[in-house]
Length: 361
Image (cartoon, rainbow, N blue to C red; front, side, top):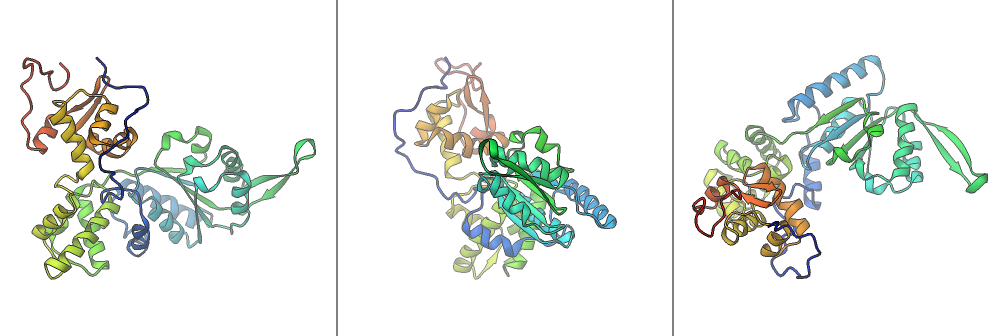
């Protein structure tokens, strides 16, 4: 039987709402303010993403040697990995000003035309979430990127006239978390494409040490390793956890962070040793305790934890799958042996009477 219901849910969720998660990779207001002070200023200072940094360094040095603007750059990857930071570094390396906007803010071709027509020669235009730009603006961007020209339509109907507008050479830096949603004609117009990978723990330790210095926080090697290990491979989360541990250390430990203090602080904030928070553990707990490890449909699992289907699928599951704690199968969601071990539970015996095997066998 397939437990993955396709009809709309009729029951209203009654459980907790998991807003403002400490391990959410999206930036909030506090993150935006703090990140401005913590961002590296050049490629040498940027931690991680070795291949992207090396390739981008060649692109920028070659452009400077030619005395030309850099090729258009597309950066893809999960939130919090440094796409905005790299765009600012590109502008700094090219000694050019930067204009920042986002795809959702450009709903009409006229919005884009107004931005493009005000650019200076060599300026960097950073377009975040470029895949969410409207189709008319997207089609205008094709010509702007390739020919540095846009056609402004004046009037309506049969009397409408296209007025060509020449643009100064500029560098577009597009950032996206959903590279697959970009149409091929747009993707092909970027001269350089870099995919941002999740960070290794040792790289995040360097991020934590650097941020601690800038925030004037005393932290030892083991304390940084503890924070890095719970940061889900994401520098933004590492910096957020560091700030919360700093608060705890100032109140409980005279401001010094070691492994014990970091672990105690993150226990208060309900972030465990693998970076799972309340929502993650609620999903795993329901899957293991209520459904014997699965398979179970997504809608049923969402009702069990009192959350919307989309919340479980888009917020909790990606990290659980990446950590090897949960698997998506045609029959539903299934817990892996690592999930049982992480929650300290004993899996049911494979093939026991009345109990389906762990992977539906």
